[in-house]
Amino acid sequence: MTEAGRHRRWLFSVLAIAALSVAGGAARAQTTDSGDLSFELVDPKVLRVCADPRNLPFSNEKHEGFENKLAEFFAEKLQKKLDYVFFPQATGFVRMTLGAHRCDVIMGFPQGDDLVQGTNPYYRTSYALIAKAGSGLEDVDTLEDARLKGKHIGIIAGTPPATNMAIAGLMVNAKPYPLMIDTRFDNSAQAMVDDLTAGTIDAGVLWGPMAGFYAKKAAQPLHVTPLVKETTGPKLIYRIGMGVRPADQNWKRQLNRLIQENQAEINKILVDFGVPLLDESDRPLGAETAKK
Image (cartoon, rainbow, N blue to C red; front, top):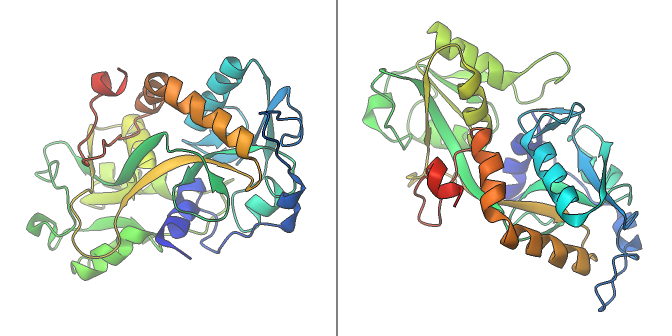
């Protein structure tokens, strides 16, 4: 599996790191050159979204995640009713949802993952370091920084930055949190942030959208710094678009137009959820700049 594929396992949820599979049922979708979506979509009058029922800050059954809010925004722009097919984003997610022609779009998917056909990306972000305000670690932007030596750092086992931490010699004092959990009862990201505020760990490394979301909810001020300067190990920066079936060309083009025409509104939703956005030069986008 590619690094993007491994990343997707954490972006979607903390249920599993096994590879997803796409069923041949995706071939049921057809396309025409006229822009007609009647052959591509389950119901052309409905924006039917494939989503996880318990995966904040991305999505949940109560429609509280930022991917839920983006879906609501897109449905309004498309003048479609919004509907969901919920399925845990573990092994078989794509096969049982998009591939089975039960829904038409996955709202967040990393560019370069060949499990689906990707739209143009609508945001760019990275894994991030979370630290307490006043800890002296607020401006650390690489795991190679000497200030992290000897620190107790939280890491989700099996995610890409674990490799970078091992190379930097940070795993000796690291505290691992499980990747494979039952999200009905456990939340590794929340547990890490709770440990950070309690002083059990000195810093934590999380996927950026999760870092920003849980930092905003924390009882103490926390600083989120995107890890954009890694020189060893896997790159920790990703472009995120949406996923559609390989044959759905007209649908992909329509979604691409929506992204292009509404990027400022999309950014506002992401920023409101604490997602650390990056420009193409790996510079953080401030809230005001992102919303323009």
